[in-house]
Length: 466
Image (tube, rainbow, N blue to C red; front, side, top):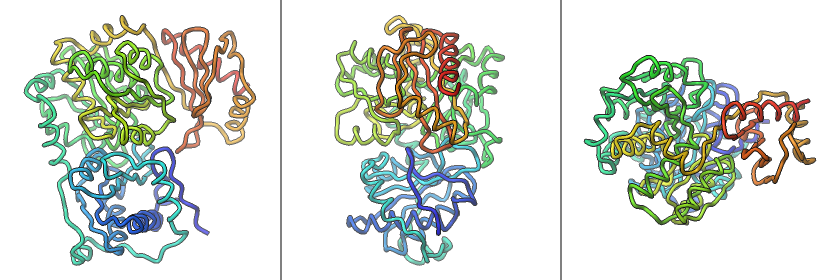
């Protein structure tokens, strides 16, 4: 009996040629197509990123929708997830499909659903699609030529559409000179072509097609970006760096010293820029459960309401689809802002922060130092513990039983909205959470400086696994 296909925090992901097969993609697509028909929907946008077999899996997806008489808009070239989301909105489609496993290791591929408002489908709709996925399917993949004969398929250059949207949304002549001092690491992902088009003089890393991603998971976190950091440290001309993940919906940045500027700081910088420099003083600030509490502090300084959501950008997007939201973001580098689509977008976020630097004439490091004067200095790190299932369950059981201290760190209060978050007596916090898409226990920590962060993480591991 084939495995039930389940959607995790961000779509369905599985190892290629294991559970992620043509048959699996056809089954998921059949669930999505049946859902569309049940809701009288008639148009879908399909895109794929740089992963192995992208066009093949996208063609299999299109085959199913055509079988159900649904119009398909397809890009034959790889694109980012935000390009598909924008395409859904601009083409007035009812659904978007992205063949991507985002930041997962190269052996994975996946399947994301995008709603008609231009962001992730809401959890309720994802559940409805999941319930309609058949255990088996007799449908077969057709060639693009065969699909063309149905008259249901049209082709669209989603990247060019996205670039026009960027040109309308930013003062590119103001930003453009910064490319002379910019290093960009595409991580072999789908942001490579758009960034090369916008900033042809930037120093580029891993900006070519390589579905093996150089053997590294294309996740823009410090430990995966040593070459980018080193390039900035060695070249005095390079004053900042930007990296995007495999489908370019997440971002990581580096300052002039080659020091990683994580998404907590980027969220704070964006909020400061939007309120103080762009003059936008309405809308809520939404952060996922793993985001720094300093974001709530800064929102309070500006008189803005702060909302915490479970982890998974779909929860932020769901909130953005019904409420006035100025800024929404998560710890893993996914950020969405008012004035764009309700979707995380690593390229758009990078452009906003470049605009902040260009308008103020300050470096990323200077802007971060200004920020610390407002909210206090802090550091953050996340350890991903690859454990056996027994070890993982043991750690989770300890959390459920209740923990009053981690070594010498006393727990002042805790919150179990999505995982186990402990606020400690060192002006820091600790979050323990099992991954929704990988066999991993994630341990997050914030403290006033990095040495303290490491102490908290090490103590947490001793407490949980000892």
